[in-house]
Length: 248
Length: 248
Image (cartoon, rainbow over all chains, first blue to last red; front, side, top):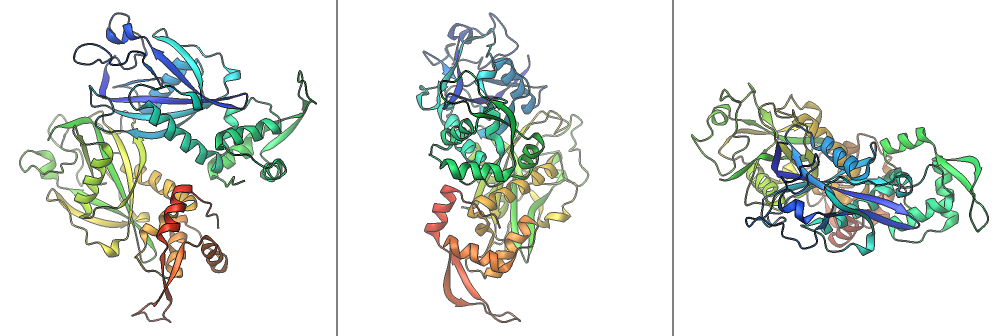
């Protein structure tokens, strides 16, 4: 595959599960990284090595990513990476921006365009590419030291996500199709890192006409079953287009 | 200068002058673009040409930009471009994102990282680099057909600016150091493309504690002189850090 060596793409994939915000990381296969031609993969992240031929990380954990093929647009290639890493198409995906410090990769001048995606891990069985040793969800506050500047990428993506949930209804991409209002509130609380007043929160949600009562109730819960809601796709799309103020 | 051929940077420089939002464009010197080595410049935008050796635009007008030097970070190089194009350092500058469609430049696969800047044209005498035939402010609604995908870049930058003025006090970078409340309102009206109710607008501004009465009055105006205000730098920085809701 003909790639642009100076240009890579990295994806910060956020998930929300049991009141925790998570990020999908992978441990690159050191052996394959050191000799990328031994077992070529359609998705070959970070195939280049230091001048001495070794990938300079003992335990290379990082964001799913790779070098941009000459014949793929950066948006299309970001979708390729997402699909390879998760097995899912049609994920909510946004560009965060380019990271371009001269020393961000010690052995190569490479600028990385970073994307972030939102998924609900419960819904998807994450499968990895054959190149990947392991793919794992990490709690956002338990991310280990990553390769290159990937920690900074996650930090910036989280900051952007916090801004975005306040002006667009993106939070809903992180929830199952039917959810309780408590789950919705927990999502906002987790992403924003604050506690919200339940009464005010529900008033705000109601005023936005964004969620619809499904008439169904939770099942299989120890506590009293709560009503299940779904979001109104039309209102959702209108709000996503306009941007709104979700200051609570 | 050693550059990364597959990576360029373009700057959308917005200015606000007499109730108009403007963008700084330049007409590239075709002769120099066709033979860039004849008169090398420290800032050499788009030096590459089509296989037949010609730059494929009859009248190449576009955003100030150029290919990223190997030894400059993308943020630093964006500042270089701004300084070369305007003669000013320390301009409000933000990254918009990367443009990476495969066909955006017909004769080369190049991804461009776009920045946008805000300045007040009254304050600065724009000087161009020796490479540039002409630099000119264009009204935002009178932008001609530009090279590559530069029209789309301006459109996207304008959209981002509209979002940004509603959550950060960035609008103030477009005003002179001292301004009237009418000028401030006109700025918001121009950027947002809507009319605002004067009483509500002033109430909102007052509540934000963002502007301070300088005690001075306008001079040299035909109408009744109005009070001049400046913004409070401390409040400004706090609001810029937090983001706020400027929904009017």
